[in-house]
Image (cartoon, rainbow, N blue to C red; front, side, top):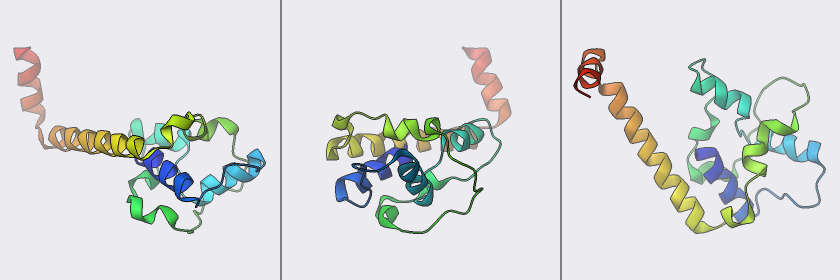
Amino acid sequence: LSNKARFIVMVVKGVLELRKKKKAELLQELKQHGFASMKDLNAIMHGKGGKRSGDLPIDEASGDGAVAGSEKDVEKTEYDYLLGMNLWSLTYEKVVEILKLRDQKKQELDELLATSLEMMWDRDLAA
């Protein structure tokens, strides 16, 4: 969710230009701006670590720091979750909605991490 919000902000502010660019150039620019690929996001979801570039604050969205990584070609599908968003997603309201959802999910994660295994087990038995 943080990646999506940061992507929208960068496009709206003109930091990231999508028009009149070749696919390979655009994908490389996304990688340089530190956007996580689907492969990275899947690794995080499955608990295998990976970089968490999506945790950058929105204010850092205009940063130009390059991300170190392998030099292999980036597949088109690795950034489809960003490039496949419809144009209605490029609005301030959508950014606010995504940030609110991100904060809600972070709160849920914090609550889950603060819950002991025994408490989880008791809740499952009570359900």
